[in-house]
Image (tube, rainbow, N blue to C red; front, side):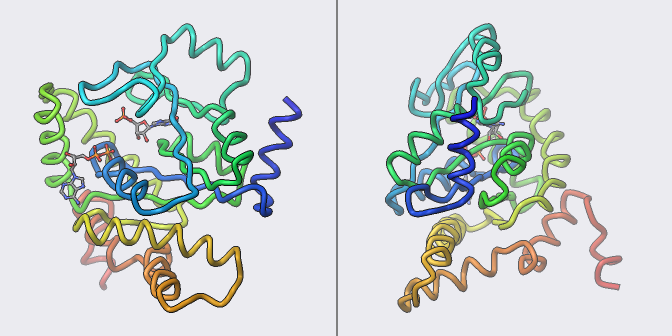
Amino acid sequence: MRDCAHSEARYYQGNTLAGILFIISAPSGSGKSTLVNHLRSLVTDIDFSVSYTTRAPRRTEQPGREYYYTSPAKFEEMIQRDEFLEWALVFDNYYGTARRSLTEAQAAGKDLLLDIDVQGAGQVREKIPDAVSIFVLPPNPEELAARLRNRSIEEGSLDEQEISRRLAKARGEIEAYRQYRYILVNDKLDYAVESLTAIVIAERAMRQGAQPDPETARMMQLADKCRQANATERLEPVLASFGLIDMHATRA
Ligand code: ADP
Ligand code: 5GP
């Protein structure tokens, strides 16, 4: 127990041995996995934490690649043994990040990216306040529904009830955007991929503190536009489309 707490603190200090902890969250179907897959091919020295889940694998998924698939009983044993940095119930299934992911990334001197829901992100932020959090938004509910539907068709398992459930949940999750440092609207995929890459590069450059080269400086500017405080113009139409704000009242 004490070792775990100690290693989390080292991550928080962000010294040269421990890297940066990135958290990425989004309503299901926003395109987060797509963005993360692109990031994996563009950026080195970042590990991607493979979570544990009790949900069944999708047709395109492989054990140990997307998730470690486990039974509820085994998951509960892991909770008892305090093996999780965070865990949550999402859509009636357990999902959790093993503390091991963090210690392994630390040992390798790498950054670590956690793809977790808003409940898990809250738990991690409490333990590691220096974590860099990124919230991905779909452009509007119609596009989110279309993406959920397309993905289900691609996987050969169109389940309208499940899609409706995920859509209904999205609205509540989107309100959590306020707790995240960066906001990405995944409208045009290329721009969203470049913005995500820019956030990673900018955070690294800020911690190094050295004079950035021109390309790094450009990426830092792009990342800056995604900071929550600077993202209002991109964010407001999305919030309005989900009925979370009234654009006319905002503009008045
Ligand atoms: P998540 O991981 O957030 O649940 P996925 O990455 O699985 O979402 O994406 C859901 C669906 O949306 C996939 O079929 C994916 O190809 C598609 N998609 C992702 N980003 C975009 C985008 N910018 N424009 C159009 N379709 C997208
Ligand atoms: P999916 O079943 O679509 O892969 O994921 C459903 C949700 O669970 C997504 O929001 C995803 O980010 C989240 N999730 C995946 N792994 C974890 C985890 O380890 N912890 C938490 N809290 N959420 C997770």
